[in-house]
Length: 183
Image (cartoon, rainbow, N blue to C red):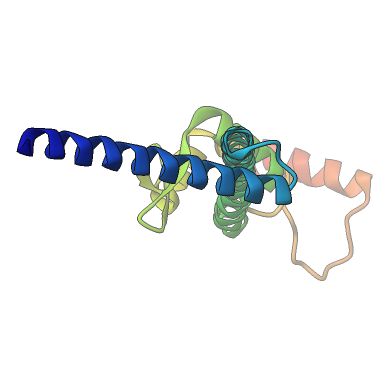
């Protein structure tokens, strides 16, 4: 008898559980319909679908943000290199202009074509040497870049206040020198 009673209680519990589940499902379906869905399962499926679309949107936005960040970083790097190049040019041209160079632009272009100019630890280096030392050697090797020293192109400059000699007088003095002072 006791077994039968236990069995009946289990069957009754199962029926109660089934009735509870049915009532719960009906209530969930009713609430889902109130929210505009066909059923509780329909609402869950649409929420999952929306979550999937949301995830896709998040991934798309993340990818776009990464691409924009990469493009901005590349642009910043380009600007940094341009500003660094301007700084290098200024530093090197400044040193060249202090060295009495005829044409600073041409000297810089030649130097840039022959050597690697960079900034390391805040100092301008040319082929690994300090800019000043390297430019000194560079100008010794390329002295044609320097302005001529002295006062002219071979003709002596007279500081005498005497009146210039006439051509006849210069010829007479030349003959005297050739003949050893004989008049």
